[in-house]
Length: 154
Ligand code: HEC
Picture 1 (cartoon, rainbow, N blue to C red):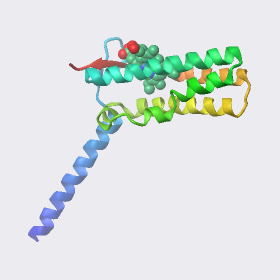
Picture 2 (tube, rainbow, N blue to C red):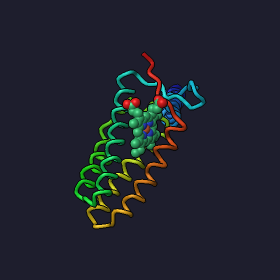
Picture 3 (tube, rainbow, N blue to C red):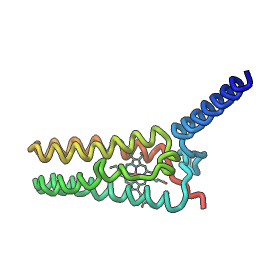
Picture 4 (cartoon, protein in one colour):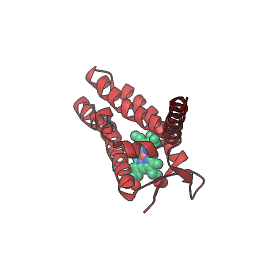
């Protein structure tokens, strides 16, 4: 009887732990922002890391547009690959847990798009088609920026 009760308590604690973890993973570490957007609260170093990834995305898109403009497919491939999934995969788990689910999935879909652009350029699609893909991706950049803000905690 006694060990049964202990087992139930252990199970309950386990369920609570998983539940709390899942809740944070979905919700992230957020607060009301200063301008109507939702702020994601990070350590200074984590915020710097996300922002440097953002600057990487901006120069990748710039490279894609420049390549498309010059009809230089190699330039497009190089620029878009640099912002593909491979670079996004090594973000640490503590930071991942602070980013809300919606933010993560939008961010991942942008990295995925960059890989798709590289593949399309490799597969010989035309520059206007690449431009169309880039325009679609830019709507995701805009959507995310209008919803979220990054706030440093320390
Ligand atoms: C998943 C959400 C998300 C996506 C997708 C996203 N961004 Fe961002 N980006 C942010 C947030 C949040 C900030 C910080 C905004 C703030 O604090 O006001 C930011 C900031 C930036 C900055 C400023 C960097 C700095 O050093 O201050 C640039 C540039 C940028 N993003 C470019 C892009 C480009 C280009 C894309 C698309 C190819 C993109 N972002 C897609 C969320 C996103």
